[in-house]
Image 1 (cartoon, helix red, strand yellow):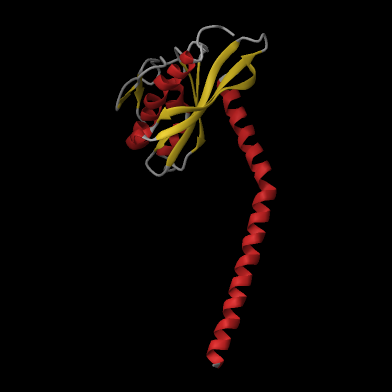
Image 2: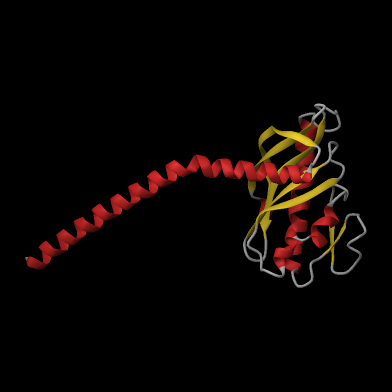
Length: 206
């Protein structure tokens, strides 16, 4: 009987403690959520501005576009228009994701107003191996995408990274990560272009 009473007392203590800490976490999460969300928006805006430098601001022109992502999974993508000081479209930007060597890779990709060439990309989040896969943030790799044709691109193990075309030279020792980046671009770019065409946003200069 004493053991049962002790068990009930301890169980109630555990339940009350769990409820209290759960409530505390929920309250903290609710209080910090707006700030976390704003930080994400600020980071995205900063990355987009780094890619389309002549943009005065960005407008969400397509919200939740249906895209077929990696392994045929359905994903929804927001597409932003970069607006220049004179009101013309300076380009478009969107977030794309794929599976790298260690974890998911998220990048912000930007294209010119006609979606004919890439302005490049910025890494939004990545946990790739330091000294290898994380070199996707380095100029050696990322600069190869600047002004490259906005279409299907190809990965090369060796080549000239200074030559701007549809061929991208892989990061030495990080073939999986390099391939993941190529896949991200190839999966998303044509579908994004199609969405922009459907909305009449490509090449109108508005």
